[in-house]
Image (tube, rainbow, N blue to C red; front, side):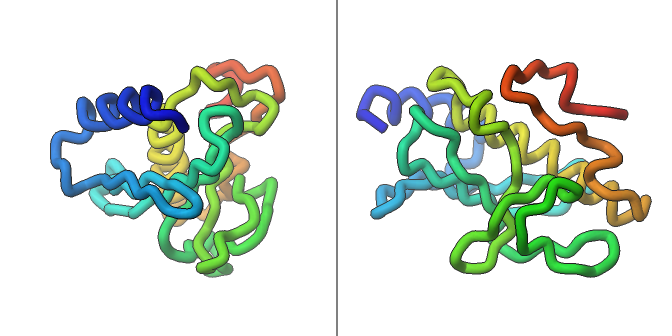
Length: 152
């Protein structure tokens, strides 16, 4: 990501995340945004949004832990039912947040973050309801519209 885009992304995140210690941009071999996401239930999760070819391609979003589904099984593989992708090399759950072909370069890291927070809230609902993620989320097509994402 070039300097102008980085400054824009940083200012957007700073505008919404009022606590500067709740996020960090890291310029590593694979640049990433590390950011705390708190669900409506109050549970904090740390997200790592990796940006190797951002904004030209969809960033990968990981929860910095291995989540377990409502049956206690690790969410450690690509699963249409769980709306997850292959895990990080650190064995962290990867959230499916956008269809790769629906990704557009004008989409922001904040948009990714918001979708991850939605996913995490639904994840917590599945732990209570014993339903799958798929019960609450539909699969995004290549021609994404917001209306098609949430089912209930």
